[in-house]
Image (cartoon, rainbow over all chains, first blue to last red; front, side, top):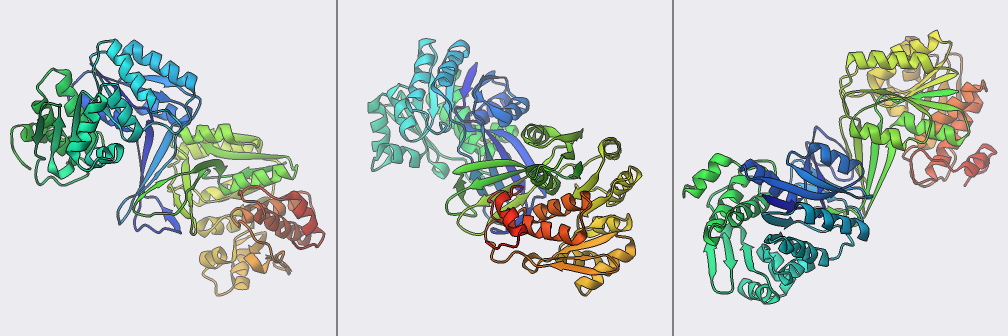
Length: 293
Length: 293
């Protein structure tokens, strides 16, 4: 079982329009709504891989009710009084425009209930993925890693900024991308940044390098795998698919180098699908076997 | 009692942002949600004037549930299987950008139920205001005017295009703005357009001219009142406030010229308020008494 924790889930709305006219009225041709948030995407990819998965997330308001109805993976929702955020993506003739709501303020009592619920359901492997709601303390991430450790469960954290540092201090496997790593650690280069997170206490540091593949720092060694070349499509959600590949492999006790290969192949297989949280499974198998598109 | 009919109500969402960055990610600072649709705005202004009012509207989906909870005027909702539309207005550093969803497709059976509900609750005076959902026949407007007439109730219609022509044929008082009038009738000027609608059967044609005031064509005469000068603020919803002023006066049996004066004064009083559907009541009284801002 893999449990994915999404601290700030979202209703992801896409408006398909023709020519984008900022400062004017734009008639929307098609409305797409899907459950979003990085941990939700990770859970959907794991479910597609037939890995037993459970999503844990705070839900509140009309958006929370919608998310609860629309989620197609098993989940534990902790009720909050605030309303979950919505993101609106304008898909017109140019580069997409995105509007992101700030999300709910979650009270201390609600976070306490959230931690208690996590303690009840965590088992196997925990993935904490995505931003925290506004006002939430980065220490929450350390609390969640601690709750999992008490249950004998290792944790993989995909976060940025102070939450990434808190996850490292709490001894999680962390998975920043290169720019998140440099921003959080103020390091001059990737190796220095990874070393800083390992010094803080991170169990392993997995760095996604985009088109340059994935690297993993363990303190003893650096493992790297190249990206699958010549993959073109929708990069949104590719990082979440890579996280799912990493988590599935680590949860199954497979060697780190295999986990990196699975991550690279699943990330590429996600680029081939137009919707975040979906992967092209036959392509994933081909990429694992060394094929390219 | 005034009944307002809103064929295509909306959840009006406003996102306050800083600098608007099309093609990029925009963090929303503040989210405002309010029930919208022209007939809903008219009902809210009438309620503010202490005029007994009832809104009739089709509600469906999560947006419909939200509207039902948020509406602060008495209403009759006819359930539909589709989901009510949402409009998103981006209030940033430049002119507002608006995205309008197409709205639900309402089935023939649902429209039949809608007409039956209208027949049950219509009394006093009917206002039909705003666009029809996609795919809806303009003849529906004629049906509603006919249902009201059967109950001895006159109807004021604020619509455009084929729905405006259908309302005129059905014998309603119609209230287009100047450009809607010219577009629907293909007339060369306002007088010719109004004459065309009167020939079709319109009881009266009230034309809002923006900063140039309001005119009413009765077939025998043309009445005009000037706009309140030097009013600056938010023009969104000013037309709906003017419709409310017109409807309240006509429903009370007051002379047409008084109805036009009330419409001009209420429209100006709405411009002074930042939110559509609200009016500055003390300013309305001052404007009625001949004062200017």
